[in-house]
Image (cartoon, rainbow, N blue to C red):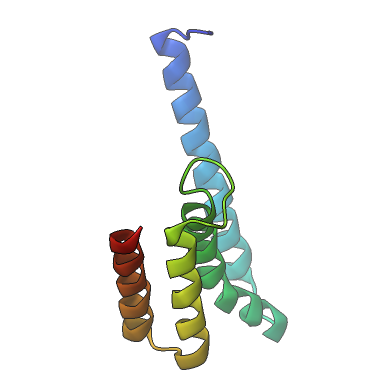
Amino acid sequence: MTTFSPGAIWVIVITIGVGTFLIRVSFLALLGRVERIPDWGTRILRLIPAAVLAAIAAPALTHATGSFDLGTVRFAAGAAAALVAWRTRNVIATLAVGMGTLWILQALV
């Protein structure tokens, strides 16, 4: 195991912070010079929240036990919620069905 000195850790933290700042400000600086974002760009930007949510939720549903497993109650509840979201586009119904399915399956298993 490699150990780092406190000074090295601070250099790493500051470097990562500056890098993150530069990545984020670069988009603001580039978009600030554009008068109008093209239609394809706005379509892509509208999909970002859904992609981020899926990237956060998918591992919790497919790797709940620490390894890839589609037979978990979490995955079944997520699939039920995804079906409701797709059919109704109602956030409250999606949450109710997902959590309800999870609680029922956890009680039965």
